Length: 61
Image (cartoon, helix red, strand yellow):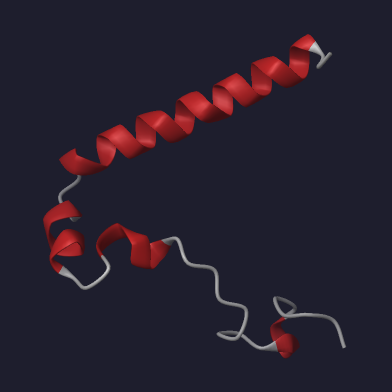
């Protein structure tokens, strides 16, 4: 069974993410972002090839 601390921290994390997701519509930039191709989903993609391995973000050689 998970420890109480783990359940609490995960509950807080879920609450923060939910608050952010719900509040995104009141941001001034929301209309501009929604008008773009991909909308908010363009900011949640993780691309490893953008920085390359020299930046420390890519796979180790």
